Picture 1 (cartoon, rainbow, N blue to C red):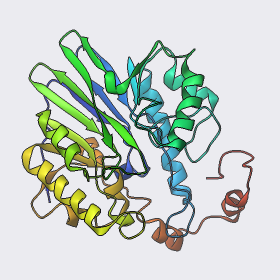
Picture 2: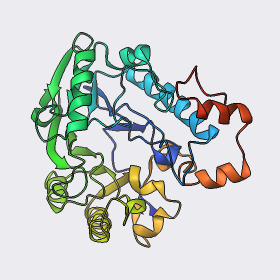
Picture 3: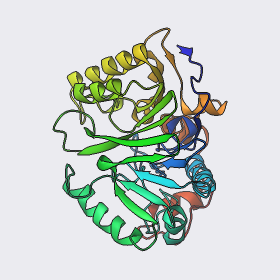
Picture 4: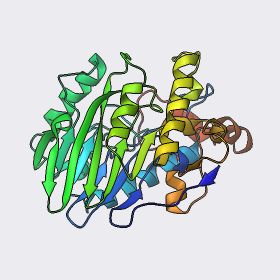
Length: 319
């Protein structure tokens, strides 16, 4: 695999959190001379992977990711919620797996323009329930709430558009739909396409390519879910569509694909591609993918294991 060069000179981006940085997230800061945006300021840890809870180092990573997200949200005019999974938005309840509470929730959304997935259309039951609670909590905090699918904002020379809804994976998936976003400034375009899983959907691939982006930030296929929650055909379609995307534009790959240690073999030899870690100039830190190894070589303390066993957490993990 060959690292691509960043194609953008006028649009600035800074990855905040994702699997290559040790957590589940696709949080991304994007800035033009006209506007500053934080896409999907959520972060989370898988409650179980390989039969194990998160390792202490994962809780350290989620704590640091949350600090980074808050730092960049302070600069932002706009924040987005592409869909209502906890690694993509910040709820107002206490959860150390998302490292959040009411105060952090308020810090994320107060006085922001919030571009939000339509809570009543193209959404499954669980996400609709979360959406209702979220909107009730932000309606008196946000400067303005805009339905993401209907977003078409022009600020100076910058245009922000909602793309979709796009399937969260395959067509007619039970996981519902997501909103992708296009940011265009002069002759540069970036598309933020979370959780399209490759994309698996051919129609989602068509939407992304039709936008003619300079760069796509895309959630890759969840190869670790093959034969568990996804068919082999869906996973292969996600891989092939990701390769098609890489062949036609510049790509930063994130999220589901990076939950396996050997993810690079799926994009093909010689593929020009970047990760969030590459853009930050850091080594990949695939903590979830290596959770089993972490438990073997860095066994958690008795205090940490006791905290994990607590049904009602008394406070943050002892890390």
